[in-house]
Length: 243
Length: 359
Image (cartoon, rainbow over all chains, first blue to last red; front, side, top):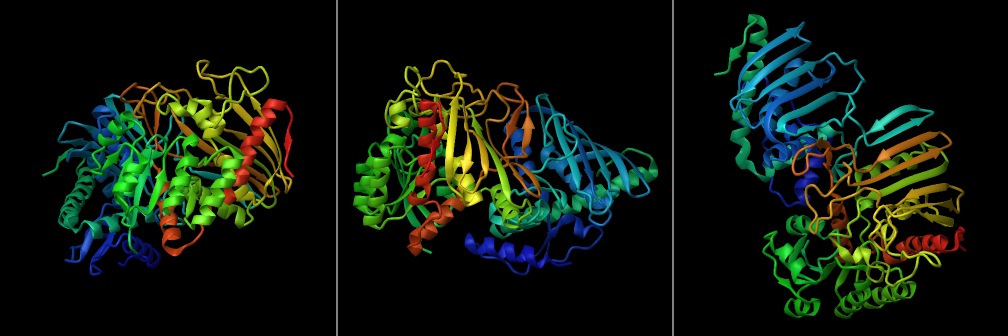
């Protein structure tokens, strides 16, 4: 498992621009790539989505108390089998529960069908509850779709605007070539899709602040346990405490 | 590359805050000092704790810091000509705000000052470093839309006049007190002066210049300001593209003295949306969207929380590149002149009630 060449080139460009000395020996890949594998010393499981601007701003809304006393999270994430396994979607969404909910998952009850789609109810150690709807049944070629809503005693925050069901794009074209949409979110990394940008930014951040490597490896172990717990809860038809 | 030693002048422009983080973080810059135009703006600046010395006059700052190589000219429009003269005299490079001046004699003098002194002058039109504009440019270059027929752009915001009062003073914003039309009690200097981007973008994206332009001012939303806040513009480019612009202050605001959370009354405080119609189809775009949304503190109102505002990174990168490599910025005074002439023509059209034709 190696970093895509174009992503690596873009990362090198950023490192050079900002004069960051890189440890070229690190294997910087999205954390879900390492599910079920033993980590090598060089492996750094990245929590790329935490570097996506929409999640940075949602987190700011919570941590700056723009919305006060969060009570519930409502997340959903649909990908295609070709792009995402169910485990990878669970891994990412449960990390977002902890990142945006600012707590640790302590229990969950999960229902999964055919290993392709499921619904999970989680509880965090700060009392917040959350629902996570995941599915890997989007047809190939259709866009990845997600929603993150944070409900508080004062205010609701969301990455979907009111009265919409799917994420919006920045540009839509309706031409003789058909309908296309584009979402460009980073001028320094123009041309890359949102997920690649998040990976480049996450890898850059590790090179800039290498002190976080141990924390990333530890969170990966924790998230791997959460994924296993989700599968176990479905099999046992029980709520399971996370220890 | 040796970092450029840079300062900010005046601190009274609405975009000033955008530069703080860029100047503090960009390794190609060394932020040396700032000058404040009043004790009020000085105190606001000092609250940011950037640990950069703040002086009460440009001259004092320049005298104490002869190492300053470049400035961000973050001042009211009417101050620019004096500051241009001083910077040119001292050989200091200029990152000018989006309106260097509306006075075309002053504009010519600025071009001459820059040419004679050999300094770099870049005009701050940050949309050129917006990734959605990058995408639109690519769509046009790839001929996805074919020949362009029509271009519609909004540059709609709230009004900044309560936080940046000079933007509501005709002499300080437009440069002189000129009635919008004979007998009109309002004056040039309002929302049109705040929104050059759409006039610039159509030139940049279509590669053409204005043929004729017409503008109509509506009744003000804010009846207690003396400059226009509602205005529509249409016309044609020399290549036949018809256009419609909305550069209004059509989003209401809380009258805050310092911009911050809760400034907006309408959920989205600023938009630049561009629609293009061409022989192969249409394109619709939102240069500042999508974002995230909330109805929290301070007013429990539905609010857009922007997720992208990094245009200043690319803009400053180009400025530094031009200084160190003796290059000319793509948005230089000569390029921008036709944009300012078009905006002046809008006021002329409002006054005469007829379109204004360009030679």
